[in-house]
Image (cartoon, rainbow, N blue to C red; front, side, top):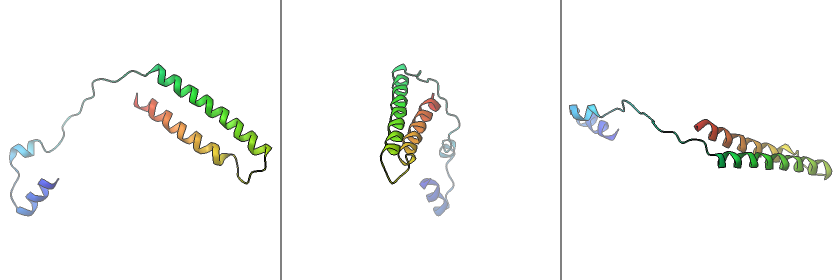
Length: 92
């Protein structure tokens, strides 16, 4: 990028050798790692713990007088867990 700027300011044309390597022509990804059973088991355990946490928070918000709705606690947890799970399964 800066080499092109210097050429533009100085008025000198680019050499053919530099112009040949100016752009990426092809990218290939040959190998993908298989999904890890340990990671998938960890994701399942985390989702179970999140479900238990949701139940406990809903119970606590209904049982005790708190000045906020339970979704202020549960929704960010669910959102980040969904995002992390989607990123993991989206990359494989």
